[in-house]
Image 1 (cartoon, rainbow, N blue to C red):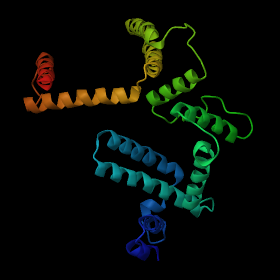
Image 2: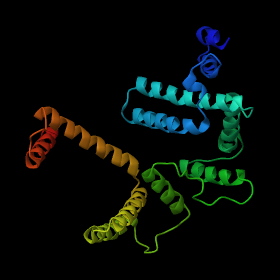
Image 3: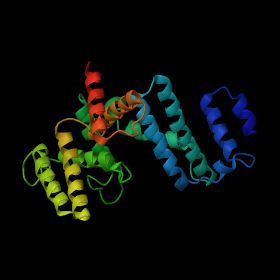
Image 4: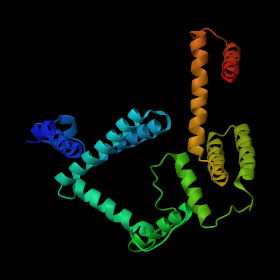
Length: 263
């Protein structure tokens, strides 16, 4: 029945629901049938990153395609939990609507919020109220599975919003100089463990400095990587091949590619 519904259903969301049911059914796809919430974690992360990349670099059509892939992951996971008798996609949607209404009393209630910052502060207050038992720590709700640079930024953001200042009392942008000198000392020591520790401290402080300066380190780094990769590709295309070129020749060609970019 699900197979026919997929082909005949006019409502795209109902068709997607039927599609997932068919894939997980007895006559469905062997690969899809064996998936579990645990095995799906990596695919959820991959699709989320592909959507983020499309939002940054893609066309509207590419964004829509990647949004569809993320939507499929949500429907697919909901189907797995439905099969276990726990909840279905409508339960997921109902919880989402309930939560969003409760966290937007300035829209659906009598409260008032005139700025985005007021909304942000109330959002965190609502999250605390929704937690049962011992109130969570300020940093506890930040997912450990976030990419490290993004997680570092969120940790600093949450900490700073409590009024926290570093022990030195100085802006973190100034402290990055101290951390870099410590990294240089660790490098000179030749101790890999010491280098790793110093590098982590430097990067963590740099993420906090980015927050203080109003820039997101992940966005800034992504643009820098794109810039380097684009310049490297232009150099490679102009050279035809880098095979046989000396390091000095490659350096000169890279500089030339940068100069041509400015013209």
